[in-house]
Amino acid sequence: MSRSTNLVIKLASGVEAPERLAQAFSVATTALASGISVSFWLTGEASWLALPGRAQEFNLEHAPSIADSIGVILAAGTLTLCTQCAMRRDIKEEDLISGIRIAGAATYVEEIMREATQALIY
Image (tube, rainbow, N blue to C red; front, side):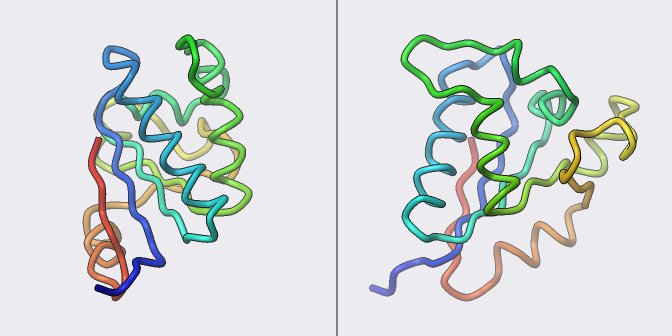
């Protein structure tokens, strides 16, 4: 079995599912630290985390800071907000944390179909 060198994570849950949210970010930062390329997608209620200050509001005991994790992903990977999710929440590109991009399903499909890629959905 070949080892994946690319990881695409889609997070659809927000603060209403704190352990799922924290786990997705923990897996992403661990993969980056292991030398794996990471593309992290914020969809659904996780979309709100693309806005400045929102991640700082989240706190889960024994979980790393989500704000710090966003910084790690932006520094070493890609962080994307779903186009339709942004539109449904009236989030514009100028509202986002610097470095987060907005992209749609075609880009997501392109990423998950790359060779040596593993996709995870939380």
